Image 1: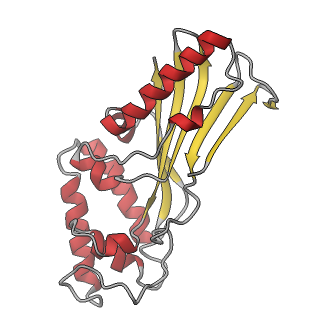
Image 2 (image 1 turned 90 degrees about the vertical axis):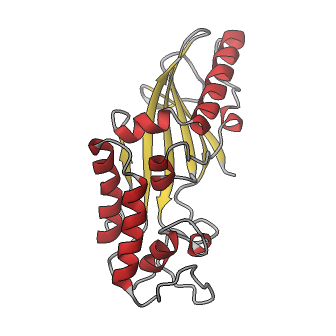
Length: 231
């Protein structure tokens, strides 16, 4: 698992930390393709997708994937469903530019209350405040060791759009012994890999098959969600 830290001051990179700096800790690497190849359209003829629909019935696979996706997000409010729809639109239309949801989005609201996310965030914040309280600096704080790549599944909505994650960033913008402000970014691939091809979860094998259709549609991409916390 990749881990790194970077401190920035008003005038750019700083060789040391002082109050007013922002320090980012990160684990994972969302720009790297996963082992099951969920970030390309490369075909894998050796993989037999778990589906009763023939691979060539593209319209049927589009319906199966869309039904599972929109069914999974159906319990949230209309604003949240519109945000999820952006992901589907980008995938279907081949808009493979990196995309992220702001800290004021419904995606952020839902992620911020997910237990798997909270375990990491609270652990990180507690350790950072304790370290600052002892040393009055963040120099030497091994924050990336406290992070992880959570599996987000507390609600049907978040399990549908996210599930596993590829990278977790935590940027400390202010810290004292009693208070900390952190900007989190959780990153993933919106795509289906070879493990998804054989999944029994509805829609995933069809997403995998659609992604391997030649052409400019059904293209995987990198996306993320930002969350601000003050503790």
